[in-house]
Length: 95
Image (cartoon, rainbow, N blue to C red):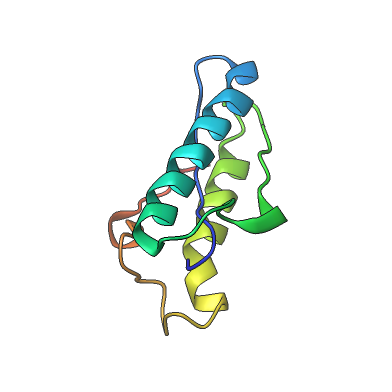
C-alpha cells in the first residue's frame, strides 16, 4: 500500500499491542520519511489496532484475507499477488 501497512500480530501479552504498534508506527514513519524527505505520521488517521483472542483463528484468517485483498481493492494490482506479499505461500489453517 502506498499510505499504510497491515500487521497481523500475536503479542505474548494482549496489553503489549499498543506498545508494539507505537514502536512499529514510529519506526515506519522514520524510515519512510527519511526516504521521502518529509516529516509527520505515516498512514494518516486510519491507524487502528484491534485485539482478539489468539484462539479466534477464524478472525485471524479473515483479517489475513482482507489484508491480501487490499492492493487489489485499491486498484494497485490486478490479482492478489503484490510485491512483499506472502499470498502465494499462504495456507490458512483448517477450521
